[in-house]
Length: 128
Image 1 (cartoon, rainbow, N blue to C red):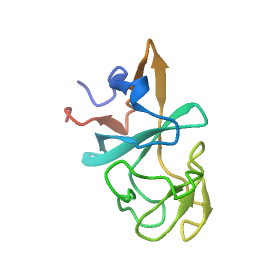
Image 2: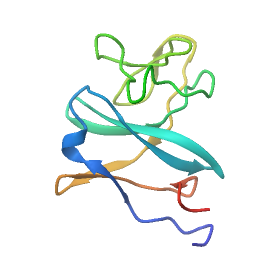
Image 3: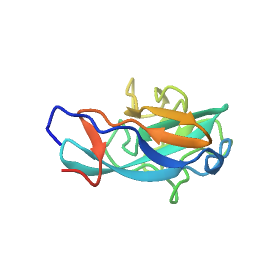
Image 4: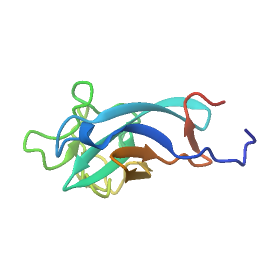
């Protein structure tokens, strides 16, 4: 694949695997030639995905594998420094992330499946 080509949508999981405000599905991507974890979850009926990187300090945020939401299941919360993000926009709403934002990965759902969409900067992990 040439550098300017973008891979087609990548199957992530069955739609049913993303339970409302439940455990996220984690997956690997390559961003700027580095392997990075990403996650997808369902919030208010929408499937959303982000790189698993806090805007405050680029570290993985989950409390345990796939656990990103706070105790009340209202916000994505970084387990390291407590930065709090709106699940639908990825925008920081409280904490040391200031006006930062999580890096979104575009998702679509069709025929009971969830797909993520690679970009020039974020590619499937099996590609170089």
